[in-house]
Length: 124
Image (tube, rainbow, N blue to C red):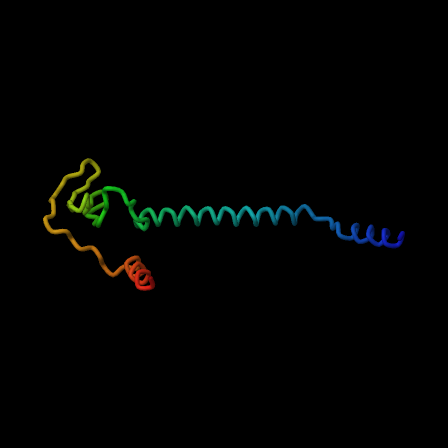
């Protein structure tokens, strides 16, 4: 029994390996560098998503159907409110209604989201 204890103590003392201070700092700096790189990547991707309007609008009362940029701060926006579509001119200072459309513009193009919806309904 004493030999088992002695063997166990010897194994436990061999498992403790001294670590050099330089190796710890190198590991820490690599970890911090990777963390900073991941954070920068997250912010860059969030900026791209925001800039390209890749996030769909909410399903509220007002639905943005289409947007076309005319300049740095000017754009034409087609919105839909309760089934009626309005064409708006938007600048940095004001928003003007250009026209109230009598016939709704069909924006159901062949996008990935529409194809996915179609494939989903075909499966059911």
